[in-house]
Length: 433
Ligand code: HEM
Image (cartoon, rainbow, N blue to C red; front, side, top):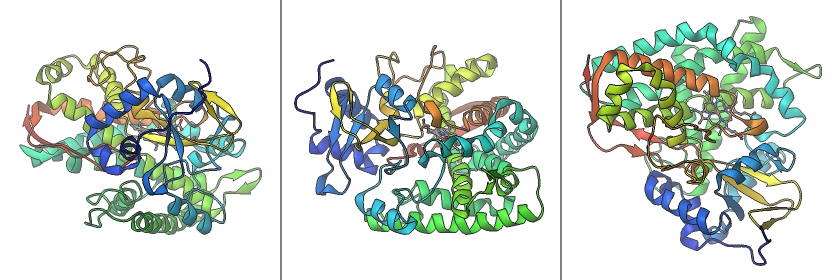
């Protein structure tokens, strides 16, 4: 493709649609914006109004998002914020951390060579073979969760009853967090990821200023750090088989992990492990509640379940973007990109690219192939993808065993969030089998 002489710049309306958390609560109009941008200007410069955000390139085509994700030397995670952050938030993070643009020093904020060394510490734990050890526990938890759902019926909110607590409980067990501390973890994660949504950040205030949101996120990070510092200390004194023990006692190049690295690791596992899976689980249930025939079909034929799980993950794309920084001058879709430029790889747009997915807005459990990008690709590809799939499959087996039918019982509402998005309420009417 020829290099464009004048790089495309998004209109102010489109720029707002991309950076405003509220636009992520109305899915279809947002997908319309991505469709138009992808077709006309697949790499487009976003200059947010009032210069609140540093300018960045929005990348919407599947192939381009894939290329950037896989080129981990050409597109870096650590030098600039890995999640869309306003200038004030970045400034604050740099001043608090002593230079890093990311408040939490987690795997997604690292580059080679330290990234792989850190990732290898737990990678084995999250492989299917290791997960088989905890499958019986997950199955037991899924059964209990569905029992509670049936008790709460016939009308209930699926998010509060099932999709939020279930994956939280799984990841907390893996981490070694006792059950009585789970509400605190749920609250903190919602503050961390849902800082932009008044229902999720628990402030009860609509239209918080960016500074207020940053304060909420900062408070959550500090509380997470305090909590996991204590947990690590306990596991050093008395190691167990959980991931907290593994990390508390791990070394890299002969040195134990620093408190900030340790906290960052726990936080990403605690946080990444449940809001995401909650969103894809609720999305799958929404799709099934709207399609009685599909529900009956999968109830009768469980071999369809893996397809449903995979399609739910694509269709919901809970992690909506990550950011990268170009390491050197390059070109994407004919647009010259300079070393140091910031890019948004937009998984929602990529997973709705008609060049890759026929009728992308349709929930099609039979979609094959379904090589979606919801888990990313390359060196940072989701560490928990096997766990997420396993959890969802087991939960839906339990749900399909116990439920005769399910239908919508009100309006399902999405969170206001540019980063991890998805349903925050899903009112359903169920009939037990
Ligand atoms: C449906 C559920 C999930 C989705 C959609 C999801 C999505 C993602 C995405 C898009 C990335 C970044 C990939 C990239 O940069 O290429 C990521 C990274 C990560 N995810 Fe997940 N995730 C899910 C569940 C989980 C679970 C259950 C865990 C584990 C407890 C987890 C742990 C992580 C970690 C640790 C990383 C960082 C990996 C690295 O940077 O090396 N995720 N996830």
